[in-house]
Image 1 (tube, rainbow, N blue to C red):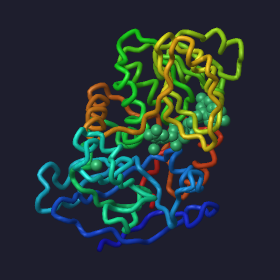
Image 2 (image 1 turned 90 degrees about the vertical axis):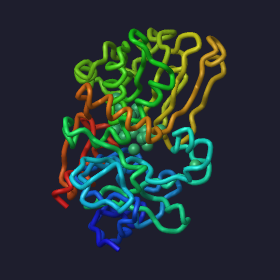
Image 3 (image 1 turned 90 degrees about the horizontal axis):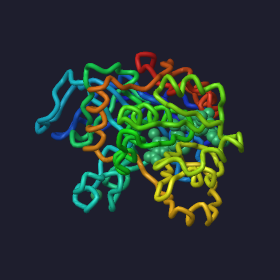
Image 4 (image 1 turned 120 degrees about the horizontal axis):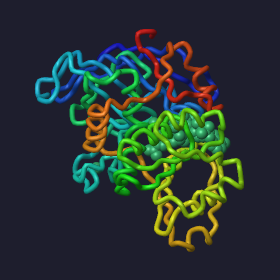
Length: 347
Ligand code: NAP
Ligand code: ZN
Ligand code: ZN
């Protein structure tokens, strides 16, 4: 077993603190990586604080992991020591169900081994995430990171990037399409960059008027202050796709109204409380309400390559791991420009 150090929380109300634990030895199909950077996703906060009622402790969060390979197993063919690699939200699945076979492992019908707050395929060994110095991952669940990309900025691609890329592809966004992004946080700002890179005409819906200049710089053409009822009304019947990344309870009906006929509102944010949906905004214009969850391994690699070709990374604030609690507080207050990333040298 490999002695490993990370930061863990021991209950929904405790602070993250140094934690020693063991990772498995490098098996024939495994890649051992030294973790260089790990992004802080709002899902880390939801789970560390027990907001999804599925938390197990001790919990080492972190699923936006970028590192360097230090060792590979005897059967590993795609990676070698020194390669830059990433790991995202899951590290194993059954590999045989229809979803796994289609490359949609995030919807594995047997068991998705999430990178932390979960158990391995054996049903008992706990998984620990990327707020740590090293990780062992089966090579089939390891992503390749281009050395052309800024590594700290590349870490958030592993969750925020793929979670917004996947619905843009799923709904076939084309140049000129009007796309809305709700919430300018970690996911939202990647949604803006990626949609703009696909040629879409992007509008940000935000509760923070101070983010308007950033929305433009990130590639948005429009900005709607979602607390301004008149501005929301003026946005009606305009968008073919809206991606909602908001982490807290909020009204969805205004965004349904902002869709054109046959348009789709895709929910990716996970507020803890349910939303009330009115029938009229859905039936008028036969609009659609949908969801999306991260992306499969193949699509994640496609997104990473798309970003490498266009030099797209996340706008990050790099922090020392000792400042993780402050970063959580600021994220919850929507005061993140636009992703906190932990520099693992500070561990
Ligand atoms: P984040 O960086 O905190 O961004 C969320 C944004 O939502 C904030 O910046 C803010 O944007 C807006 N917001 C926050 N509170 C709000 C409120 N009360 N009313 C309206 N808007 C509010 O979070 P993130 O890391 O991007 O994650 C966003 C959500 O997606 C989380 O719930 C996370 O768990 C979920 N998630 C889902 C997936 C998936 O696969 N579906 C993957 C990753 C994360 P403005 O200041 O612009 O209003
Ligand atoms: Zn995430
Ligand atoms: Zn499966």
